[in-house]
Image (cartoon, rainbow, N blue to C red):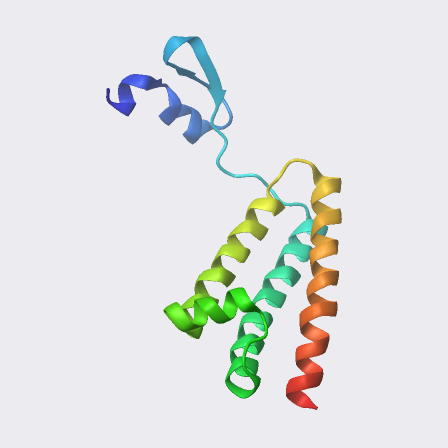
Length: 134
């Protein structure tokens, strides 16, 4: 069965806003592509993304100088290489951060992003900075 036969009127709904789309068998959904992220949550997402980039770069530099202590990352480094492993894991983490930033429960999103920001600062930024610069 073709997708166009299942979903009717969604093309115009996407173009004009969150108008309901009629899906086969009487199911009605709303097409909503763009969700605005409030300023404070946007800032938390950007800071978390910056920490992910830092963590990936610092992990790569630290791995070259000291080796990798995390057994999961060490096994992935041995299998696929450090660069590809870090790129894939950090892209996945960034994608998850963007998904969390778009979630409708704003208070829960803010608390979660503050928690991850604090954890990555305490467990990545500070230790890697001290080890690599010290």
